[in-house]
Image (cartoon, rainbow, N blue to C red; front, top):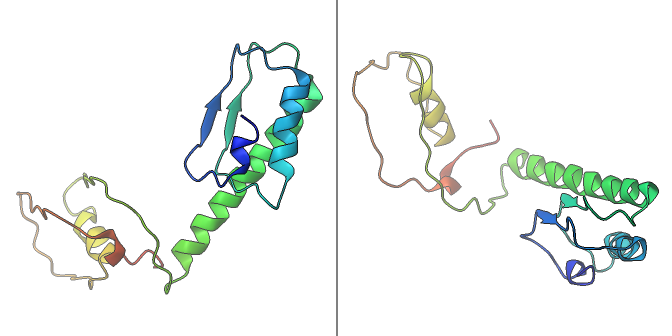
Length: 143
């Protein structure tokens, strides 16, 4: 399993290995694979080892430190992507519902994300304006 994580993992964020009789040497193998800079390319940020009493505290701490480093690296990657105006990342699709009190800035926020200008004289309406499809690659996240 540790060797599988060495091969360009881009989707597995969390792994629960609780109650799996993982030995200290097995946990050390995870560390070895996670430290291999040549092949390790993971987004893994959480591994649960509860119920595996054979793993020493020092090994668990080393694994936790490596996972925290992954989390920090991922956060930095996202920040760089957001701050780089020329880079367009794949954001996939999602449903977004903007909710709030009247004149709280919902429309202004959506317009800003779409790269549209702020309209100070925008009229408040007590109705819902729906847009059936929004391409998030149009969002201007650098502002």
